[in-house]
View 1 (cartoon, one colour):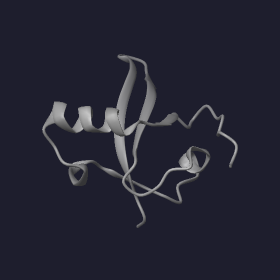
View 2 (tube, rainbow, N blue to C red):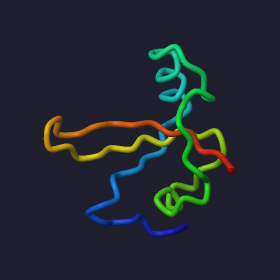
View 3 (cartoon, one colour):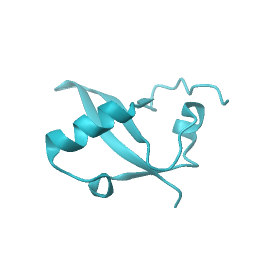
View 4 (cartoon, rainbow, N blue to C red):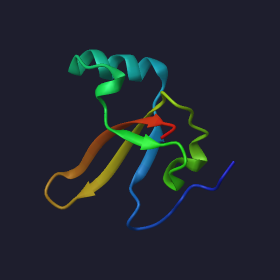
Length: 77
């Protein structure tokens, strides 16, 4: 398993559970294919042991909102 990336310019990446994924898709009434993609080979998720179809929650620091949360689905290419 790769080491978590600790860098000022790289936001926190977290793999959400299947239950959380289902709740997210239901809340926004979207399908997995409508989420933006993140590539499986992206170094920022190497430590998460992600597989295609997993959803990654990205938490970015924001000067106006404090934190902003984004979701990406893992794709091979």
